[in-house]
Image (cartoon, rainbow over all chains, first blue to last red; front, side, top):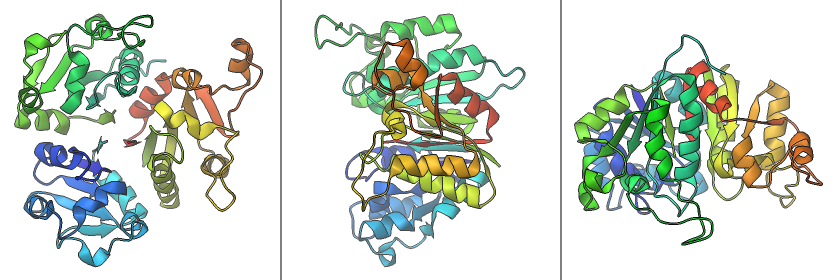
Length: 101
Length: 127
Length: 130
């Protein structure tokens, strides 16, 4: 299994979209750094993410949400909150980590 | 230098254009050094990464943009037994590119094939 | 589990080094082994001993040095990437006829082979970049 990491805002780059294009069913995706902006409700990416949740386990790094003044309450339902310890567990649980820089 | 016996699948994931930043050149330097380790190496070019392989790059330290054209090195990869170069089909279509525009032989993979390639890897180096 | 970390961006400009540091700390806390942290591209600048951040900010370079000391971490700076960016240890400064060196404690300069070796020897490689 693969863990994909996305650290770019979907408004800035196509990292998230391409990650979703190549991720296989059951893969995990971690949104962190500026990638967290893709995990929130009320954006034009909400529908994309809601669809993606049907195929992937999606995680978001809470310290990056809080640092940016965004609200964890606004994380799209189904996206799981995690922290650096959880990030470490995700890396350990998956065979390979693929960074979408 | 070599780790006898261990062969892992290494994927170099190239998604950035050359010259505008150094990622393409320094990624290639890793590939060249990595070749000595006899691992199972693949290179994937997605997004602007495909521009790294464009034919007819013309610049040198004393002409053009004043930066060395390092694209010829991709042609030398074969001599290092780095022969698995893959490009993303959608990337090529979006940019109006065909394999004739590229300076080395590549295999064009669709979404499912590229996903499968990624699934098989042990180590992914993203640049 | 044995992890390797690749840091592709310099300190302060991007979050990559901060994220890598937080990740490394969390991994160590969980009892994982960090086989090596490799600094590439502008990531080599994380090793500059001459870094002087404002007093109320984190000291990214010292933070890595201290973590290395506490956990016996192998912090490796790519020699080719370092040289083109003016990062030299004592030996390289001498060899290139330079009057100064600037590699912080706990970091060592070595070749790209160290990155490949880290990929082979570790069970996971995590890339932090831009």
